[in-house]
Length: 137
Image (spheres, one colour):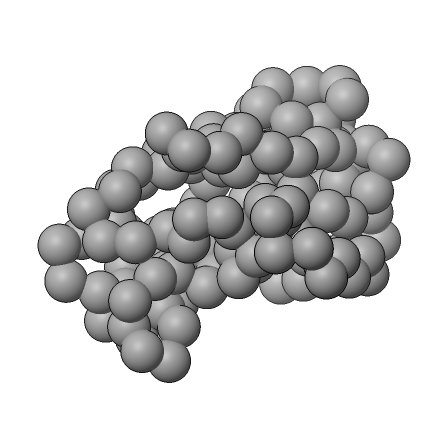
């Protein structure tokens, strides 16, 4: 994990729509990490949900009883599906289809689990007051 974890709220500031963070390879690493849709699993966990997020390009279904999240990667330094040493990629996890939504004062965990290599665990709690954009560090 490199830098902060940022939460974006919905328009009413009652729940979180997205969580964003940047990943980079370990300082001493010489190995690439596969961040393709088949090379990594992104999981969202809280006291109500434990779900694997949908891969980039996958749309939410129309069933409001099905809790879903989706992730997408945006390259800051580098490109392709492999995170090489010295590269950085932003991960955005969309939570607009969670049931229930992620409200204030709730703890959550996002795990980025590549098929090979160490997992990255992002564990945070939403503050007591939700603002449009928040740094969760």
